[in-house]
Length: 465
Image (cartoon, rainbow, N blue to C red; front, side, top):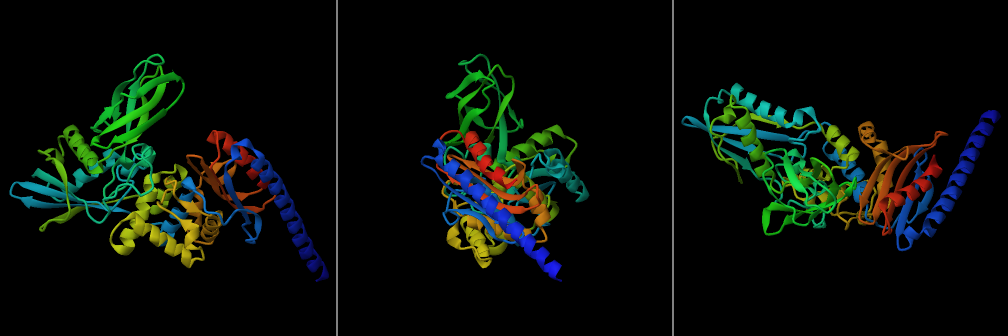
């Protein structure tokens, strides 16, 4: 028995010595970071916790609220697993009503951010069109003339973008807004042919082909060869069917593409239906397809002939975290409100997130958020709150789905975050000696390039390897 006690004491002593060593090395590494010229006017927060014991290994400013960028997604996705469940699926209903020799069709969306996405086999354009056409056949209404298609725009806020998003972001693909109906992640591509540097680029095509929108490139230039995508897209405030593209695209390229946001998802989807019905003339939808428009309510006398279901939530979270899709975060936030309150609005979704985590011991004021994706520079969250969410998730039955969705950076399972002068990492890491850590690391207000800031953050995190 004495040997057992001695072994336990030895193990605890070794663990304590190791923890002290890691702490001292982190103190040294962060001291070097603080002296760096990029940190002259910056503030940072780093919290490292031992996953097994919950003991704090290192704490610097863990109670200071900072902008998180996409690190906020770890909170939104964990909330989604808890409130919606990993098997949750969005649905889009299709209803019809016969009107003599024709039929009217009504589409009732419920906020699905993956509808028409290229990321899943079941959500791709071809698959969705085929399923709608097949459903018409099964319902024995494919022989009727389609006289109208209406989209019920109800149940979700008309505020397409969260408060706090900046003008520079919202017309670009990563700044796509969210509504009751979303199509192809509300994203389209603009391809350019370019000549020599300083010559005027030319639009070669829009992808998909039915992305019918006016593109203004008066302020777009051709940059140096291999300079990459240095463009920003802006909505025209006086014409929501025009996008202004500024900046530069690289010289001597054919079909060099950039991505932007389609401002009207209902019109985008209507374009898709018309385009595919013209391609597939043997389907019921090809019969004099009328122009699609929106309505506020489902008219009387309609019956549902097809319900489309999205991939399960765990699949959505996988891409949400892996590829940092802001649209998914905003959809989830509104879905929390839709499922709990009956109306999908961002501000109500924020309240639900804050209330949920307050019940788990996280102060609301440490989770001061404006959106679900982290794109808003007005978000203020503490690393203490981030770590507590990550600790909670570790104990839940859905944790494996959550953990597997984290990208890998610097040999660690970390979600990254980047907006102007903000960089962050948070997640999990197992060191070579088997110690497990939960980490949240945020820097706000640094100067210079983000890439060099990342290298310096990695030097601090390397202590945990």
